[in-house]
Image (cartoon, rainbow, N blue to C red; front, side, top):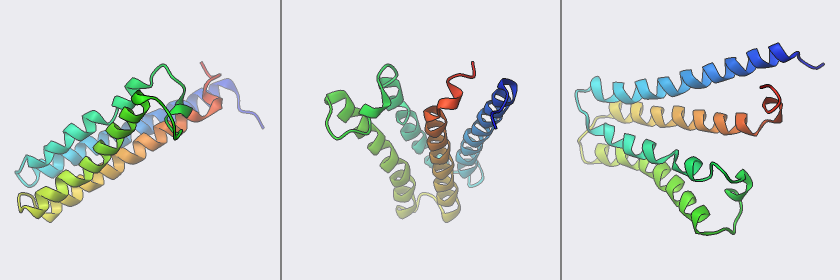
Length: 138
């Protein structure tokens, strides 16, 4: 059963709204991890979140299959490095801060929860971009 064009548009808008809510909740968790415990050191993780979209910016004009390939030129390898460094840094910075005694368990939990929410939002965005049904909506 095929959905009408207006139903597909509404469904797509709902998914985008839920994606925006996920990203907003990740930002709220990030800020609450700092504000509730009156310690703003966990905001260092924001640097990693700023690096995270760089591979998408670098690959804006190319096909997405080159990101998943083993071979590639130096830009492909550089974007893979940036993605890996930002993912490891997003987990390592709060863990190191906790190990050094700068933040508590609550802030660490909220920071890692924020990372999980951002990760789910990014994976869902990539999955939504890969679906063919959205290419004919607009």
